[in-house]
Amino acid sequence: MPPNFTTHNSTRSSVHSLKDLLQEDGGAGKLLAHAQFLTRLTEIYAVAVPDYLSPTSRVVNYRAGIITIHADNGATAAKLRQMVPRLMEAFVSEGIKCNDLRIKTQAPAFKMSGESTGSDIPIARALSEKARTEIAACLHSLPDSPLRSTLQRLLDRARQE
Image 1 (cartoon, rainbow, N blue to C red):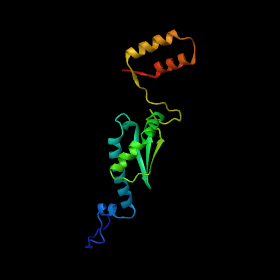
Image 2 (image 1 turned 135 degrees about the vertical axis):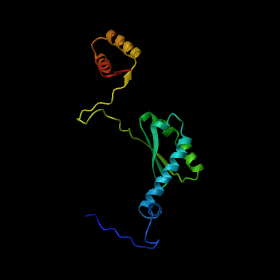
Image 3 (image 1 turned 45 degrees about the vertical axis):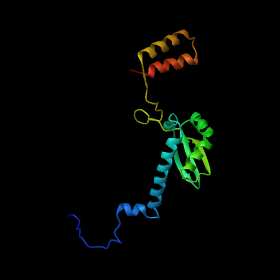
Image 4 (image 1 turned 90 degrees about the vertical axis):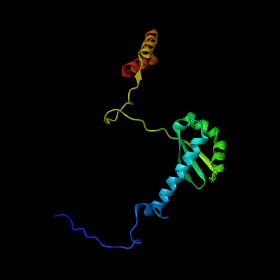
């Protein structure tokens, strides 16, 4: 038998909409405010950083005047560390209290193919016929070596376009 739902009148003060709950000072309200602030930092960062660094880095946190940025690799992290004074100036000019900027290397998780077997390999990338031909020519000119074995595995695993 379905539950018996009854309706009753309640005052506006005891009933909160989801938006009201999220905007309160405690709990979810703080989380929403922090998320909105991080969104603002991300927008400032996107304008301040060169286009070629945007896909491999992101603002991840702000705490006590310290902005934390994750870079996907060491090269991006090194370039961002060189830019710290310029990036801090960009945040400060937008009214953000920025005492320090921390750059951390955090490689992104990459997709794996198939089900998890404990020995997953990354999804194979396609190689053009020209690339396959040139790699094969190079392969045949090499003596037996780790490089030759690696190139052979590359050809064996790569998909054709």
